[in-house]
Image (cartoon, rainbow, N blue to C red):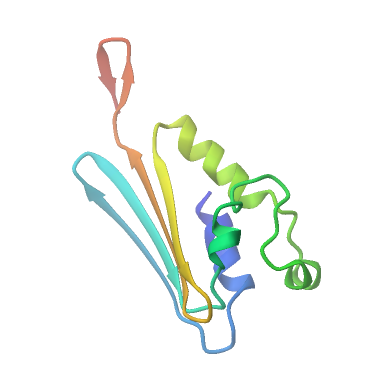
Length: 113
């Protein structure tokens, strides 16, 4: 899951891009953020980004290899664990992906680690 996010940051980075990865615990959640200073994603694309086979930049995808499934798979995994994923982006400034996954799952009346 994290590999898909980092891989996207690398694929859409330019030579001087910086990629930051953070992992921390916050109020019973595991929080992962991946932030880059790459090419960014348009608002129109952000609304479609989790659709299977959707590609933000078809030219770069062909050149660098991208099936269009990575973020759809990440979203499915995050949803499976009752988490959430949020993407903020600005063209030519970069993208920030934030994933929150509960450290404990509700199974019946019990909390399970």
